[in-house]
Every structure is written in C-alpha cells, then in structure tokens.
Length: 288
Image (cartoon, rainbow, N blue to C red; front, side):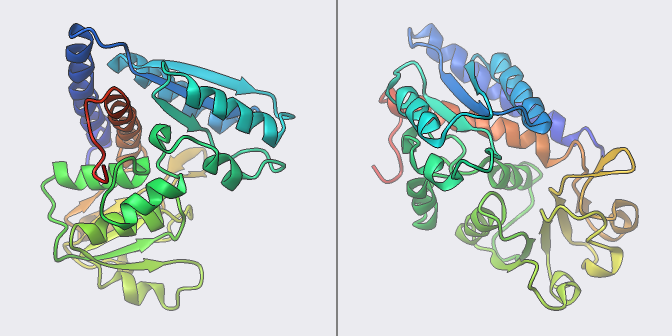
C-alpha cells in the first residue's frame, strides 16, 4: 500500500474540518482554540507538538503551546490546567505525554476538564466510551477506526486481535471495535503462543513498539493488518510488522510511516471541533 495513503486521508479529513470551521466563523462564532501543555524538552514531544500546531493552523484552529520547564511541579501543571479549563477561548486541552518522572500522569489527566480533554484520557471520557456513549475518544484508536471506515472495511462480525493493552491504544481500541460488532482479543507481554492467536485474526492491529514482531507466519491470508508501532531501526522509522514479508499475504497492510499516524492528528483536530461545538451549545454529548 502506498505510504501516502494515510497522508491523503488526513488531508481529506482536515479539508472537511476546515470547511466546517469556516462555515461557523461565517456565522459569527469565535475560532476554536486548542491549548497544548508541554513540560520539558523531550525531542520527540517537541516534534509532535510542532506538527499538531501546524495542523491546527491549516484548519482554522487557534493553537497555543504552554511550554513549561522540566522542573515544573505537579501542582503547577494542575494549576495551569485549571486556568485553561476556565478560559472560554480554549475549547480543547492536550497534555503532551510523557511527563517528567516526578509528575503523576494520572493526577494530571484527572485534573483536566472532561469536556476539553481532546485526548480522551479523562476517566469520564473513558466511561463514556465503555457505556457506548463516546464523545472525546483517544486519537490513535479513532484514527484506526476512521481509516477502516474510509477504506470500506467492515468491522462487524470480524475476529479482531490487538497486540497492545495500553490505555492509549489497546484498551480504547478494544472497546471501539466491540462497540462496532467485532469479536476482540487483546494480547500483551504475557500472552502465550501469540502467533496461534494472530493467525485467527481477520483484523490484526499491532501497537507494541517492537521491530518485526509480526512475521509472515503470524497472519491469516487475506486479512487486514494495521501497523501502528513506531520504532527507529537502522536510521529509519518502521512499524511492528515485517512489511516486506507480510504484505503479499494480506488484503491490506497499513504502512509506517504514512499510514494511521497522519490520521491520528486529524482525529485530534476533530475532537477539538467536537469539544468546541459542545461548549458553544451547537452539539449535545451522547450522554446529554
């Protein structure tokens, strides 16, 4: 599959969002605002934040980056989130992870305003997804599901296997696929005979972060394989799947880079627009 497929899809979604923002601005509504809180100078985080800010600008979302020094205390981060939660010009808040080791990520996430939590990590948003009333959902799982929808790949009735039990990808994706009618198996480091399980998958998703974890003998012929692993190997960014060996055996293999990754950023922008419309009274949450 072309390495441009995810970028092309992301551009199409961003064009749709830009048109919606433009229409709302024409009606006199203020611009949507996204605040990104970045603590420290992790190189990968700096790149991610820069890419997110660029994408915001492309669709008409006002992006502000609150770059705090690595020595910032947990209480100071929580205070900044409270300030942003009360700011009517800020409709979405994103805390760039990982945080420095002295800051408790769980406490920080719980300090977010749930209706501005565009990463979908707040316990209330997790509960909404669990009860089949999703509102703001994590961007990577949302990007995977959106990718499948736009490729016209049916989810209902499929045997789905996810190699990841993280709260960022594996767990929320399992709920999303269950909600769409798939039978879901979640695998992780303690799973026995991983290959025997993955060979049964009509839809296999890997987000383990291990080079060539998924080999040709581990996939069902004609299946769909979604690779969202990110690894740096021999000077290149690669996924979890041995792409050269697996691609000839399956109906679809998403590339790394250029697959689900760009769609993930588009889903963050969509969450920001959903939060914006809810706060302006233009959209009700599924749970009211």
